[in-house]
Image (cartoon, rainbow, N blue to C red; front, side, top):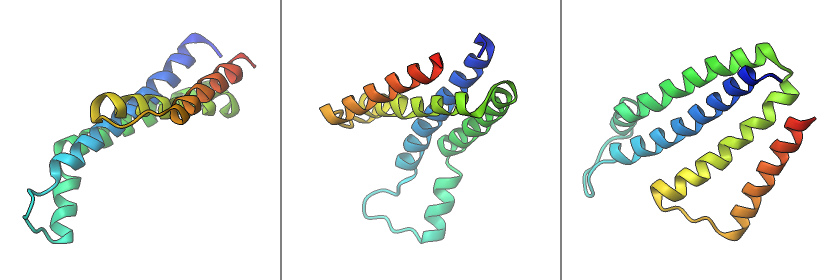
Length: 123
C-alpha cells in the first residue's frame, strides 16, 4: 500500500470519527430544555436538522468518498482493518470532550486494536 492510499484511508477514518463527535454534540444540543415536551416527530426534526448533526452527516459523506478512492487503490482486506482505528479515535475523543471513562479494560482493548492494525499493515 503506497503512502497516498494510506493517507486516504487515515483521513477517511479520521473524518468518520470527527463525524461521530459532531453527531454527539448535535444530539446533545438538540435536546429540549428540561421540562419541555416535544412530540416524537418534532424531536426527530429538531435533531436531524440541527447544524451539528448535518455537519456530522456531511463529514460521513466526504469520508465515504475518500474511502471509495482508497478501495479503488488497494485490497479490501488490507484497507478495512484501518476502520477499527475509528474506535480508538472516538474513545479518545469521548474521554477528552465528553468526560467518558477510559478504564484499564478499554485502554487494553484500544492497545490491541492498534497492535492489530500495525500487524495487518505490515502484511
